[in-house]
Amino acid sequence: MAKIEVQGYGTYSIENGTRLVNALEDNGIDILHRCGGKAKCTTCRVEVLSGDLGPIGEKEANIIETKGLSGNVRLSCQICVTEDAAIKPVLTVSSEGLDAGPRPSEECE
Image 1 (cartoon, rainbow, N blue to C red):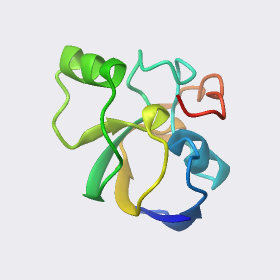
Image 2: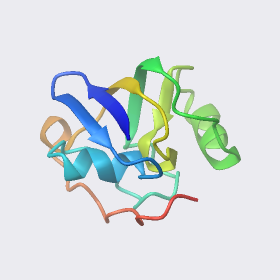
Image 3: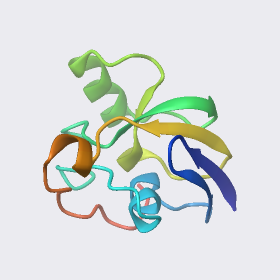
């Protein structure tokens, strides 16, 4: 189990191998995921405050570069939790007034 501290929400014990976006949603955090976890929209982005969220895959790296996002931003739909970290959700349903989007698959890629 990893401990994920979510700024403004609390600290959660997350089972290793869980997709971060789903763990956030399951713990009551209204994170956006408009493309359903396909690394296309970047609405599920989180700012990494501390810790290691694992390597950035090719799809995630490409969209982060294309959108010009800063180095400490990751896509929660592309992260399989394995280590403790502290994060801050960037876009939420309540802050943006949008539907969350389709739930990403449970399996990490």
